[in-house]
Amino acid sequence: MTNEIKTDVAIIGAGSAGLYALREVRRAGRDFLLIDRGPLGTTCARVGCMPSKVALHAGAKWATSKAMAGIGASGVEALSIDLAATWARLREQRDFFAGSGASKARAAAGDKLIEGTARFLDPTLIEVSSPAGLQRVRARTVIIATGSRPVMPGWLDDVRDRVITTDALFELDTLPRSIGILGLGAIGLEMGLALSRLGIRVVGADLAPNVGGIVDPVLGQRARERFGQEVELWLGTQTRLERSASGIVMHADGRKAEVELLLAALGRRPNVDSLGLEAAGFPLDERGTPRFDPTTMQVGELPVFIAGDANADRPLMHEAADEGAIAGYNAARETYTRFWRKVPLGIAFSDPDIAAVGMRFDALPTEGVVVGTASGDKNGRARILGATDSLLRVYADATDGRLLGAAMVATGGEHLAHLLAWAIQRGETAHDLLALPFYHPVVEEMLQAALQDIVAQLPPRNPYPIGLAPVEHL
Image (cartoon, rainbow, N blue to C red; front, side, top):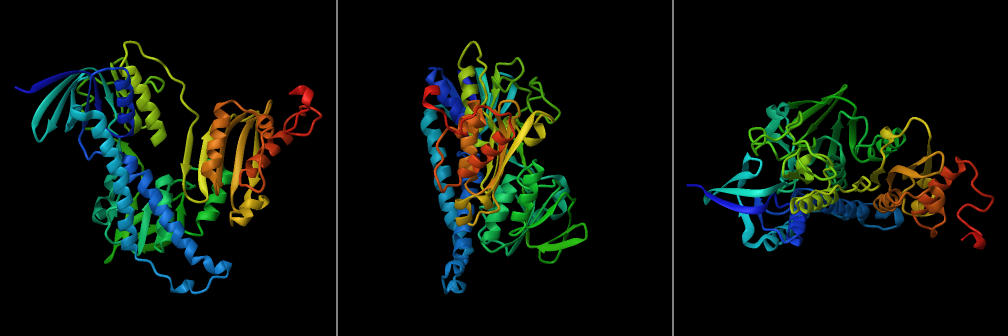
């Protein structure tokens, strides 16, 4: 007879969302079980944001060393790099991050961790298969936090043996001399730039007209011009593939390129298709993902919650943490609380960074919006840093200057994006922010310039200098 264990909360998945959920369940004093099919360690740490940033850092270091002749250095041409050693050191750092996540999961769960594959028999009854056999878990509430995996479409089957995903990229012992990349969203662009800066020829292709998920057409043009200097970009077109004796030949619009290897960076798919959701009575959308309330994380009317990449809503680590906390809080209680979601924030660490904050350009109202623009060629610090191609666009309400959103291609964009996210979430206006101090010379002065551009387009507010107030009005 299959052993059945009863618990208050069953959490399926020990990644970022699952661990933040577990924190809230423990805080509430509820009994729990944490189920994970392995390997332990978050997607971010194993194959996502952390190893990709190590690769970008290595690429930036090497590219900088090769460019030192521009400041008068000599002998630069004698420098060489062992890419196998570079990638081995990347894995060392990756293993540290992944190992830390795995240790946290084991420490947090203790003997409440079950390592095995979960499948729903009904919404609160889970069958877990492991080398030790089958177990059944009956829970009062359940949290699905099973993460995601790279998309590998069937149309790549003919060249599958020469195609990798980001799950395999960091495991390569030898990097190719040339690589094609299908999909130039954040991860595809980041890895393309990292490899190009390490001296590898990169050809990047995407059906979209812009890289990094950019929707603002002005920024899209700037990004194409900037990153096209480092990566051969094939955008807004279908790419056809065929085998060659030594790799893959890419074709698109009369262009042709032969590469040794192809990286499929075509997005990620939620790991929910093996959970038996449909048979267990879950409400699913057309993609087979559970329908849920993003303010409670509850799936339909069931005592089940879904968080992180598993729900395919906001597949970013900081969002997974928030969603896991919401799911864990509600799963541990009899009544469910709806939570405000934070302002959307996305960053590609492309240097110059691509970042989007708050309302996207394609979601802005057709009227009643002003755009403040600032370019790096007008910013002293950006000129010093060789970042004159930086561009910031801030969207604001045309009546009161309240910030709605922003997007940028900018050196230091990761920092500008955070400042703007905080300001938008607090409901700040351009006038409010201009009343705060700005140092000189700093990249943040680009934000000051964009805000001044917004104010110049608004009705006059008072006779005093912009950003200053007389003492009697303080």
